[in-house]
Amino acid sequence: MEYSPILVPVVALVAWTLVVMVWMVVTRIPAMRKAGITLGTARRGGRGANLDGVLPDEVQWKSHNYMHLMEQPTIFYAIALTLALMGMGHGINYWLAWVMSACASSTASFSRL
Image 1 (tube, rainbow, N blue to C red):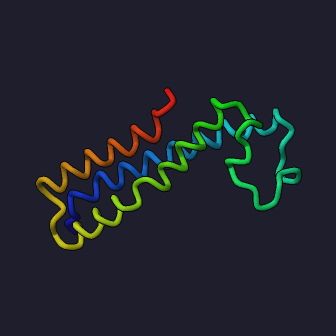
Image 2: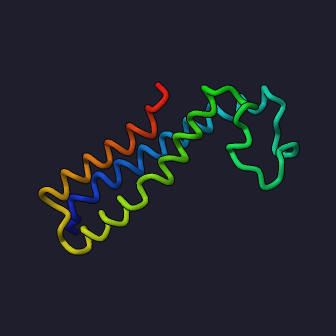
């Protein structure tokens, strides 16, 4: 089965998002334990942003970056998948997809390094 080349940067960005998600969980859960926060004591319907000021900033920025990776590339995914279905996922579109993927991952994930 042949695939459109533009799907490669899409998969790369999804993979990076999953890496950041694991990084967030691995750092956040111990910080929540240290702060005395459990699922039983957490506010129902609360959001991750509610932990700003409660957990250290170096823990929270990973969560912020993950949220940016969930929000920022939405249009990128739609355009890339449309171009793939139209058979236009090569050439300049392919390279622009890599640029967008790199920009999305770097601005979201390294904004506080």
